[in-house]
Length: 258
Length: 242
Image (cartoon, rainbow over all chains, first blue to last red; front, side):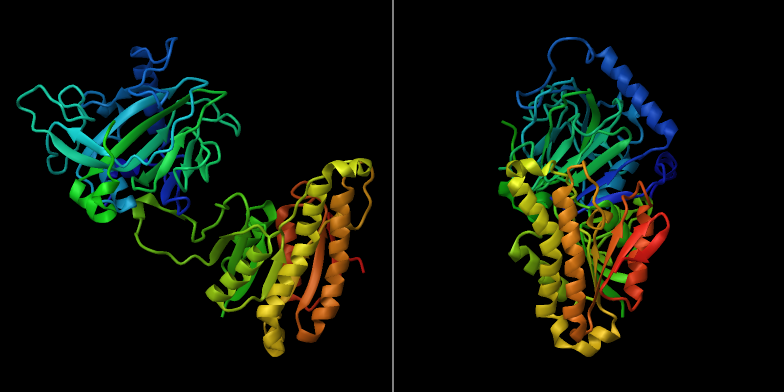
């Protein structure tokens, strides 16, 4: 049963379920105007306050994903309601048919014009959290208390929990009007060996739209370089236990951070 | 029992409109090549209400197959999938088309390969696809063909009827003119097995006429007894040209 809060936030438009190149969901005009405008306003405010729009290089955690990124924390999560709520977590869990634990890792991503192509990957990898998730709540990753990639922690009260990314969501917002040829799409592939610009499916970064997919050994995707306009989005990963994922895909499929 | 319709060019403006219109009354096999059509529910894309989503399989009346119709083995695949899924075909709508204007014929040597491709897709493929359905299905039971009013509708163009000089559409125009003649030959040669064949030649759409008008005409031809006719379809309606 979807909560009243979620129901009143959604626009009521129908969503699309695709089976190719792997099962994924797409939706445009996702939220009602008021909800979308609040999300966009808060995104822009966070981007500005943390220097994401200043000159210089994109800040990123690795060398392959050319973006400025800001993690969602318990303090910032309410700014982006309903995306980081238990109701939303349960909705995407139901829609994808994935049994998830309530652990959520999320962030704001900003690609300057001319950001480099990403790489083809599937997102099926482990993530560390400072503790278990309470019933009917969510547990956000906290990179300060417990390193999401390595599980390293300093606080002796932390009892790290290792789970696996199992659902990915990208919500596009705060972008200029997009047109074909502008780039910035989320590209979807059948195999990891394809030319990065010859995707089987492309999801354009149109405001108030989203793509959701189960992270599997076959959910190959990448960011495509944005040649004309900035590209902004909120990303979110829900997680499952490693037992759940291993039972479905085999434990050798789960990646670790390198 | 629902009629079964095969629509080529299902991702195009006309093809997708045909699929959308006919999906309530027909089982449809839509053939697309490059872009996945998402305007109607199929086994590859479906719309749903996120607030009232019942999981599991769904039974779309439109089934999509990706195929390059210029390749013989892919033509065969269409026939096999259609017969395996629906067990018959009652209506074949050849709506796939290469609508490029290659330019002045004096420079045809520069676009020989593209011209050959266009002639193959626009002119030869409709005949080959019909021939494949004849070979694997229609030749088996003339009585059934008559009972289900089976027929072929080739989507041609007004460019196959008139000469529009100076637009560089020589090859395109010839491909559609040849399709019109082949349609009449198809009608004559399929008459003994009670399968009808007609062509419709719309003016440009959705500019000159609405795409829905072309769909209406296809529905009308399908339900009629016409055969061997080439219909001009313009702002004044439809009329026979032969």
